[in-house]
Structures are given as C-alpha cells and as structure tokens.
Amino acid sequence: MRTFPPPKRSARTGSVAKQISKATLAGVVFLSSHSFAPAAKLAPYAEIASFDVQECSGIVKSRQSPNLYWVHNDSSRGSRVYAIRRDGSLVASVPTHLPNIDWEDIATDSSGNLYLGDFGNFFNTRRDLAIHVLKEPSSSAASSGISGTSYRFEYPDQNEFPPARRIYDCEALFWAGGELFLLTKSLADTHTRLYCFESLETDTVNLPALVGSFEIGPQVTAADATPDGQKLAVLTTRSVWVFERPRESRNYLAGKASMQRIQAGQCEAICWDSDETLIIANESRELFEFPVSNLIEY
Image (cartoon, rainbow, N blue to C red; front, side, top):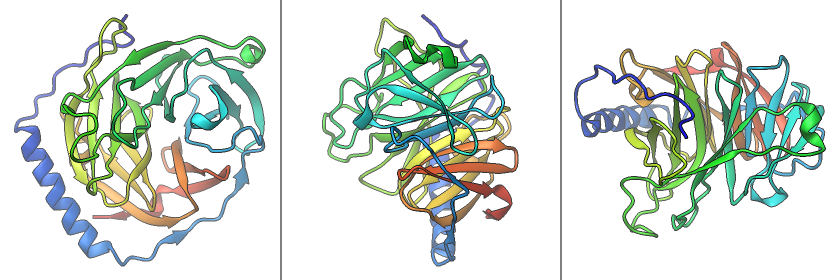
C-alpha cells in the first residue's frame, strides 16, 4: 500500500556528504557566535485543559477543520489522540487501535491523514520503529475509536543494535511536498540528521533516505512544515529554528536559517499556527505563542 506518490527527483548536484560538511561548518560558526545570546523566557497563553494529556509529545494544526489541533501523549497514557482548540479546551479524546511503544511526534498532510511517529529510541536498540497513518477522525469517533495502518522502518545506515554511537533516537516528524521526513535526536553528538520517506509500503521494512545533517546544538524534540512546504520549524530542548527550503532541494537544513534560544520548560511539541506564528507545547500542557519575527537570522 502506497500512501503518497513518489517524489520528483531534484536537480541538485553534489553529494549528501558535501552538504553535511557545509551544514556542519555553518552550524559551528553560528553556534560559536551566538552561544551567549540571551534566551527568551516565554509565558504561556493557555494550558491544555484535559489532565489525560499528561505529557504532550506532539501537536499539529488540522488542515481540515478551523481552530482544531491534534495532540498526543508519549507511551505513558495509551494510544489516544486528542483534539483541542487553540485555547487548550478539549474537543474530543479519540482512541486508536494502534500500538504506542513510544509516540514522539505527529504530522498531517493536505489529504486529511495524520502521521504518528512511533520512533522513540533512547537506547538505539529498537527493531520495531513505525509510522502509524490514520485518517483525521471526527469527534463522533470518540466512542468507538479508529483504525490506521502501521509501516515499519529502519535507518539504512544503522547496522548494529545498539550502535557504537547512539545517533538514532528521534522525536521529530513532518510532512512536506508529498514526502514524509524525520529529524533525529542524537545522543552522541550535536547533529540532527534529516531522513526522507519517498513512499511507505506495508509489506516491507521501509528505509528512509539520508538527506542531510546540521550542527544544531541542543537535541531536537519536534518539527513542523508550513502547508506549502517552504518553511520548516524545528524545536530543540532550548531553541526554536526556522529553515527555508532551498530551491530545487529537499534538504531544508542547507537552506537559510534563523533561530532563538528559549526558556519554556521541557518543550516537546511545535506547529505552525499561521505563516508568522508558531505554537509550542511543553510536557506540563502549557501552550506558548511564538512569533517568527523574534528569530535571529544568520
């Protein structure tokens, strides 16, 4: 089963290794010159009302219903998805018939699909990493629950479980331009690595392609792309980044970037609310509005 069509091949030149080197050099220069920039202390504008959302690990804005956002817990509270309003009020709590080993992020596309990243992998030993795909539910599904499809995957460059260097944890997922992307959370260095699924198949172990890498510093905890796929927001434990997609390339990490260090508790979720505003959620259910005009360009 194929959930989205294969992408058109880009006309970019040069190897991934060269792009990684360029991104690494740019990241080192940026981090060294901005490491002492003051962090913005964010104040929450609202709180997720439902106490069932004990550890918000992902948030995404619906592209099917206005003023509706989908959030979820990690592995600690079952396999429900929750629909909330922008003010944090609960609309629906929807059970899914999907396993939740360690859900870490959620994404959506323009066709009404939700993608759940079951890829928390702290020890880098998992052989059951999965992307769960389901149609965005209606509030009437709250009583009976909904089903979806699970797609197994592995990193094509991981040959040992665990590897010598733990670089295969992941907490960030986004959909853009007909493709699904992952950003890793490395426990061995300060890079994040960008992988892309060109398709998802049920009858095989899917192998996403390594697209690029970036010296981002703090560990990545969430990501989201604008509906047109031109901008990527990345959340780390201590900062917010926005990358602009380069022309004729899907390596967002090689594009123009801006960032801001933040203080807002343990933030695990981010989504675009508009072209100019991001919403961030932390594990304490607090919601923060973050204008992209606050970002510092480099």
